[in-house]
Length: 312
Image 1 (cartoon, rainbow, N blue to C red):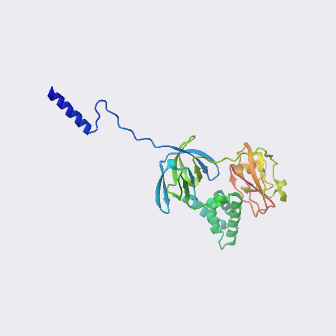
Image 2: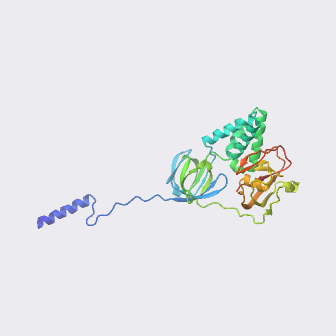
Image 3: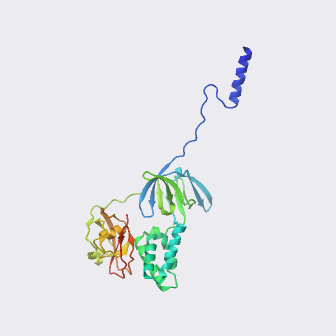
């Protein structure tokens, strides 16, 4: 009996040494799941979406070295200018076509460069220095249109990003071209940083919709008087794809049909009623035709007055 007790004691001692608990065995602890972080994302077209970031950290290159920042510590991100290689190729080709002997090709090139907004801006600044007077003139015309329709802070984006945490504000560049994210509607999606203007866990203030909107006048021909110049007005518009004619892209002649221009510019959809913000502009050197959102606009030369539609 004494021998049996001694053997049992030795077995218990061995079990203790190898970490096997006496009695009921405990399952090993499972690693904790990484925290998923909800964040509001403002895209370059000023739309805002709510996403859940799935990456646990962000690789961030600074002038003083590479950092790994836990996503859970990120409170806000301001994205610098990013131009994907495929987009830059399209922009460079369109810029070269500004000097094409074919009128249609030149017009298509101008429409393409306007479409890429701030991504086209650096190239246009270079092309505006061209020794070809026609190319330089067209580039300057596009620069003028972009400066009239795109917020100044979007045209003057730095190349670096800025990440805010609770205790720091760091400038550098996010290494990855995309982040993993989950959308409530679409499930897991790649978030292309070239499409992102900013991100914030606290969200972005949404401007209150103006309720005292003016009725759709059809065209804005009656707003060409000096007292309207530079004013931003709000009209209640039902989008249309026909029933009139429009000249321009983003910026339209005053006699363009507002309901069609609003759809063309993406402010409302066809058949949708909503408030459309427009700014009355002076005479423009020219207007570019294009097809957008199922509506085709026409090119036009100098016109006494214009209006810019602010996309939502």
